Length: 204
Length: 178
Length: 224
Image 1 (cartoon, rainbow over the protein chains, first blue to last red):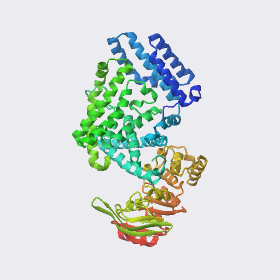
Image 2 (cartoon, each protein chain N blue to C red):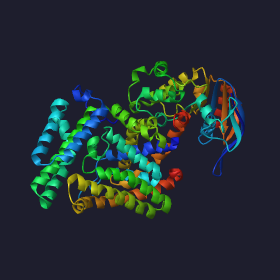
Image 3 (cartoon, rainbow over the protein chains, first blue to last red):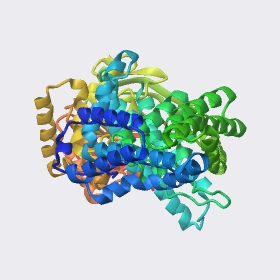
């Protein structure tokens, strides 16, 4: 079972619906691209962090989860920018990156998977003339969420079987049974979809 | 879109996600840990045709967008699209398609698959990834390219692995690309 | 009522089913045979998942070659492996999926799902992840997902092969109690004793056909 990043809560940010939250995120993101100078950006980043912890009611631990993948990048920026330009530019880039990533994380952490899926499906509405049905998109999302743990079990099962045979490091051979199993499953799954009336859904 | 298209897109999207859940493999002489996730991009391109492969990767990005931590290292959510790797993610979508196109043209031999993986899975991906990284980090293109070079050895290994696996799978399961 | 008329299926140069003609109208029919005898292909002919290379299959006077979609709305199909049949993340969503083509009102849909959950004693699992259920529970979800659409005929392709004895017996009892026409392909023939008719398939041909107890006994004699 895969678990989404959503953190349940009752905050005002949680209660906001997904669409406006995304629009707000883009507005803030745009502001950040325009704002310059370490002081201004630092203030902005602080504000975002304040909203993150005190208004959205998320924990410091979540702030860290959002920041962790950036640590190595911050190092790279610091080294490269100080080499090329100066410390001020480095600070600008780092603060902007942090503020943007934190803003986006607030949206992700406070919005349910189902609400986000609904927004995605709605965004697909204009694509209808191109043969994209919002219904189908929502179905594909659900189907994939259902299949990830099963495919992961297959990957893990094959690795275990190889370990049991003493093939600790033969990674390459392991992918072949995984792939043949996935492909065989695709035959059965598409049969199952057809048997259950897939062709009679709208937009096919 | 047929039931088979739908299922293959979902399955390869799930496969690429599942490969991202595997712990990274440290490879001697390669400075950064090698994750299995881009293997999924290459395998999709080699095995299910350009259109389905692109859509499978696009679908994975949609799942990431709605808040699932499916990228290697448990990353996910909207924030990844504001980070320095955004270009690589978008590049995957096009790269998988280009791999599929090349394999369709040149046939699914080991050499053709390897070339396809290098062009689509490395060339196209870097072509999106490097400029985006340069923009996000406000670096000159050359510096961004230099930083990306750290991933090149690992990616070349993966191009070879994916090509070998794809050719073997096609032999075990001839109707794969149908 | 299902009719097969001189049906043959070839896979490359192998003949999977060879000139089969049979008409099926009994309430509960079992189909038995060895691995590779053509049983699964036979099952897939009945709802048009496979169409014959020659001859034709008629379901309630509709030809599977032309009216596949309509036939599949009347013929439910239960697969051997529920993992390959269940497509939605949760049990309730899975049941709802089959109702999609019927274009019911939201309230009617919810009611049908609820009834089916209750009928197969799955209500307590409604919001659980289908992936985390036991094998027996999964097969029940798959069965409920088919029966929620109220098909006129149910075809089951080895529905108990992956289950333990207790779950196999339970699933088969539920299948046998259904009021629609039921065709069960299986090699667990002990579950077929009170069926109305049993067919034996071997090497792509129907080699025996008759009342359940007699046909099963004769099949068992060929095993030794």
